[in-house]
Length: 233
Image (cartoon, rainbow, N blue to C red):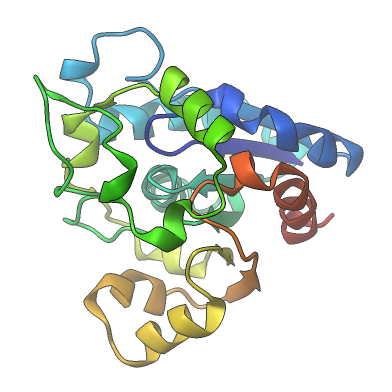
């Protein structure tokens, strides 16, 4: 199975390196992408849709005879994955959201992070809720900050563009980290606005992975195992 791995804010494709062995051992072919805006191109001009189009180009380049693909989206990468499933619902077997969720049409990933010259740099750790960062030790925090890539403001605040309701037929797996599966199910049942898109997806599997917001850094072996189980055969 082709598995396309989409990183979240301030990361690049190499952030998936620790989880690749588990996917390869399970017989999958992982594609850890570095999304446009984190790849050396002028990030001040990059939009969320630019990232989506780049992933669509990869999906379209893969031989359909190899079967459908699986998308894995971490954090903000989940918005990209959801848009790709919307554009190619017949090519996507499953979307796995790692510390992430599907972002609905017209919504954005995060418009509350501070902007500096058209970019969103990694803010001070105090900006994040305790449950997001509690499992990152000092060494991991220092390494993360040293390698952090500012996010294009057009990605963080850009509006999601969706148009095919067949996306709701694509099965998904929610790997629940800083928020438990029970909490997220509760938001869906209560009609929480942030869970509106998730509530419309017809087949959802919830998996708890107690961790912070960056489990591929804090618990890479467990992330690899859980992803391999979620993707299956």
